[in-house]
Amino acid sequence: MTIVLILFVVLLFTGLPLFVNLGLTSFLYMFLTGNNPMIAVQRITQASNSFTMIAAPFFILMGNLMNTGGVTRKMFRFANVIVGTIPGGMGHANILCSALFAGMSGTAVADAGGLGNIEIEAMRDVGYDDDFSCAVTAASSVLGPIIPPSLPMVILCVTVGASVGRCFVGGVLPGILMAGAMCALVAFYAHKRHYPRNEKPTLGIIWGAFKDAFLALMAPVILFAAIYTGVVTTTEAAIIAALYSMIIGLFGYRDLKLKDIPKIMLATCETTGVVLSIVMTANIFGYILTVAQIPQMITTVLTGIQNKFLFLLVINLFLLFVGCFMEGTAAILILGPILIPAMEAMGVSETQACLIMLLNLMIGVVTPPVGVVLYVTSNVAKVSANRVIRATMPFLIPLFIVLLIVTYVPAVTNWLPNLLYGAL
Image (cartoon, rainbow, N blue to C red):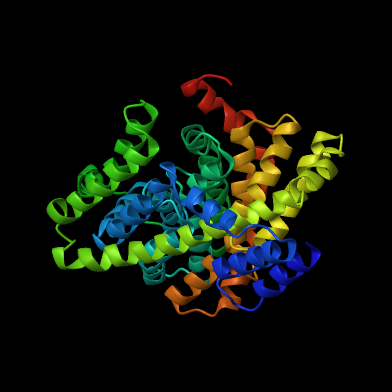
């Protein structure tokens, strides 16, 4: 097993696609240990045969439809009208828009790529520094996977057998705290650098912006209402939300054209294919780790730390380190079945454990050297990656503060799910 793990780590740094790496190392272990290769086929089939996983492509499709259908521009205008009068108003609008868009896209990359160009250009036009504009855009994109719906959260819940509904609800308060903490830092920079703010809008302007964005704002409302009232499952809600996004794009705003649909479907299939390939091969990799009793050994070591405060600190430091070097989905699939049970064994609720893991790994999307959102933002803004990285680092402070709150104040993640679903 040691040889296989070393090979896996080496291949991570070669640029080989992750699902190929997972598949190769898994089959190598099975060959070396004389395991029946049909087990791999069974594990792949088992991983793909999940009703909950069907939600993933529809959340991806919804984000793609929203981006192409001009929804993001209307949402940013509405957010700018609402908070633009605060010092550093357009920075606050950037964060608010990311929070709103999080209720539709569910991924950090979709947020940075879809909203980034609009937000950065708008901030440039009124005198904001490129570095600051990129930093706010990159950092606020972390809200995407925390505020429901969340594609990484669906994958994590499927992997560890957690309740998607409870975790979705559990992400609401942490998402609000993250947005508020980042807004506080924006206000500090705005005061220090004398960034501009908008003139106070009239009621007519506010109403016009709201009316223009109304159909877009209804998407998360419909999604949340459908899930939390129990009318539909998470998967069915994702299908409804994708259909709604298509309808408002085609017939509501009319920015989405029929000729765009095949291209959107193809992009959705490509992204889904990559995600599903990783999920299936990670299932085999998880199997060989279990056979080699790696999860049991790690759990024994971790639960040997009797002090809960220290235990959670070690978990956070480990996940932050992993997030710097490993793509979030891969870390979820490999480490989720190991760390979530270990946290539950220490008295952490399933919902809180999932949010702790997810928040740690999502901070990784804005942390070098992997930090995929940093490079997406750099590409969108045509600003060097080094400048974006340096400017984004201060925004890690509010994210770390919220991470500590989520870790050591269970009510932040447990109160709302317990209120809506009942205490476990």
